[in-house]
Length: 346
Length: 290
Image 1: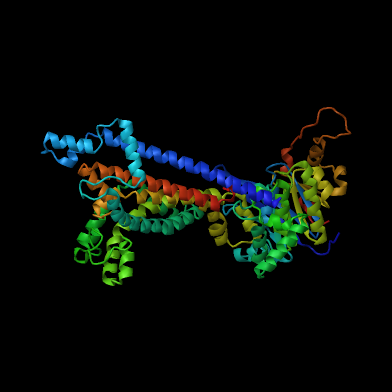
Image 2: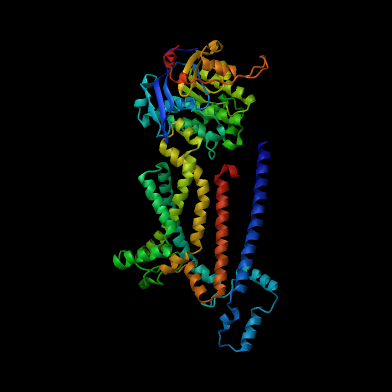
């Protein structure tokens, strides 16, 4: 009986995985199709971008043939798909390097920022949401809701500039834009690409503190937005859970109130919260274009902006594919966690 | 029937809730006392039976106003207890089984974990011993494969089994009083009797007091020693279960008359005629002791 149960469970899991993989494949195909389409539709001549506007017609024609632009569109699409699947996203006009290599270089900076911001969101936003759900209508609840509202409505570039003016220009408490002071640049070997970890590996403590000081402002700012979102969601999930009858059961058993809240109720909120955290993390990983621009943070967002302003379509489309893939991955991972944590979803 | 000593004494319990239309009185001047016996509280929806049960455990929402001359449990006044002292009473001394196991069990924890928690809150014992105790308790509520059920999640068990699990969870710390708030109303009729039999056995074996809250007059009459009949937050009358059908109170008669009988005449069932004057009369004086 038990064995039968296990076999059924394995079968079900396999079935689900296969279905999931098909879904992922379709989504990825759609992603490629859209990026390809964008590449054809935008009024930027890819040939001109490579050869320059002073090239002779012969050179232009040669480049066009070399890029396969004379082939039928559907064949171009398959060639494009083939090369993307081989990890070839084309060459950046701006840096003259393969786009994938460029992205791998800038991505750790974005990752570093996103991880710290998400940590702030989780460790400040979730407790804040819990407190304000428990003490509904209290002063703390109102404060949390105002913070959340501001987080939703204030444009991040404005808040970023304001922070720079106050903490960098006026008070001189924190360093200005960039990942590190110019003085320290290119000293530490980029082993992981994540500055703080690289500094620890190289035991360059001065540079570590400098990098940490640099990351405080952009990370706090992004963390604030993540926190605003998470605290709001946590609050509403918690209010919903605290109304449930199993909470009364726990109290009847004599469970201490803090365990009722942080164990029983939050345990049930954890499941929907995973999706929310994953989505917010995914958004941050896409490169926070505005924040990275304001703080001159050399991450994916800044790379994307620069490429866009220079009509470097290969980089733009390549970044779009990478961002889309990351989002797909984060979603898959949150689905997986969901299944692990929620016994009803297994 | 062990009737030595009073377990619980409720004197002049009044519970009200604030509402946009002023204070709403859910329970008014309710007094009764309970030994190691089974007492039923019967009434329609909104008659204040559940609120009474929850007020004893002091588990009403914080905005509820509870007033009472005294709620005495084993010579201790529960109203004077701090929240922390109350927690040592809850589960350990007074426990409660709720209506629907589908909602009253935590959906993301295994059954075993939840029962074990009820035990370990009140007793510092090694994990293995607590587990052993849990399995024994599951056996006591007539679950045949406790090892397997221990690992199940609430959504994987049936309603009847869920309620047996609930009973196991509430009885594992060996409380002396159990409040059963409509414990069988959400269950299938065929399962109801099973669950009741288990509840009855365990309560009798352990010599516990039981407050059985229900809207089912006949069920309560067959199960309890005494019956408190409530209407509009007041006690209408207290009768011995054996004498229920001799009751003369108009409300009790009304409740009895609107029950269909298999052997009775097949005419129209009478509807309950309510009388506002019942709410003013003070019947609670008759409710003290046997």
